[in-house]
Length: 120
Ligand code: FES
Image 1 (tube, rainbow, N blue to C red):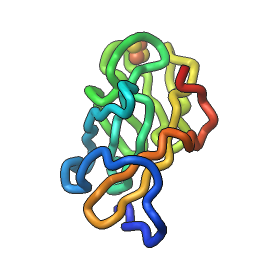
Image 2 (cartoon, rainbow, N blue to C red):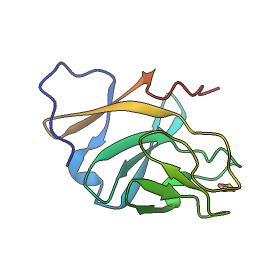
Image 3 (cartoon, rainbow, N blue to C red):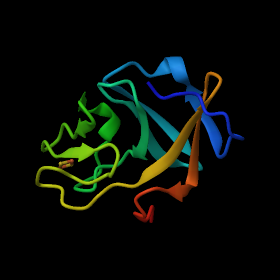
Image 4 (cartoon, helix red, strand yellow):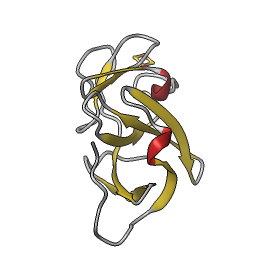
């Protein structure tokens, strides 16, 4: 599980902790930028850019397995911690954003891109 943070919240509230089941994803938007909030098989929450790096497909519609999400269009799996595609045809990573849980609120900080991938 993603443990509630004891530090001051950074970013914006995107959803409630209870809204994202294990092995599922929720599409949210911050300033019109689509982000997939994903809970992996181990209960950890992740925030990644929702658009597949191969084409304009929503990753939140894909299957979650272990710490990956699979794009339904052509099957590329992305590591939820690094954003890296683990299988072709995608070869570029998607951005991974800082996420924290405060109480029941899930915060995402779009100014903190953990893997340094541009959102442009
Ligand atoms: S659109 Fe995602 S793998 Fe092709």
